[in-house]
Image (cartoon, rainbow, N blue to C red; front, top):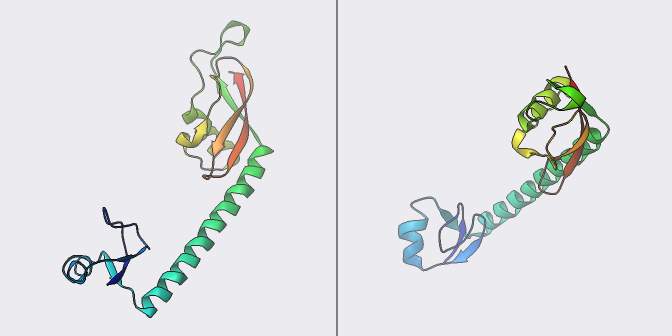
Length: 148
């Protein structure tokens, strides 16, 4: 019996795949537990429409991330920290501080885990950090570190 999986089933397949299973396995396990539906023409058509919708949503998210990356490339945020003689910062600037200042100054909500700092910010100056907005899109954001 051909079955369309509604969720991942270990050692059988992933969500959205069409798999061929024994009739008993389908009737006694997959169908009653709502892990899949029989691969009728109506269900196959629904699956095709769902995949098209998912692709459309994924493309919209990618376009949105690209637009945000272009916008962030032109922006700069300023982080004020305590600094000693010759511009040496007490401690260093963290991704949490960068995310907070990005929200306060630019209005963009960026997760601190998506910010990648190529170097430690232990001196006053201007740095460039990478922000992972999407699996395929990474933006550059300039961060200016100034003493209070």
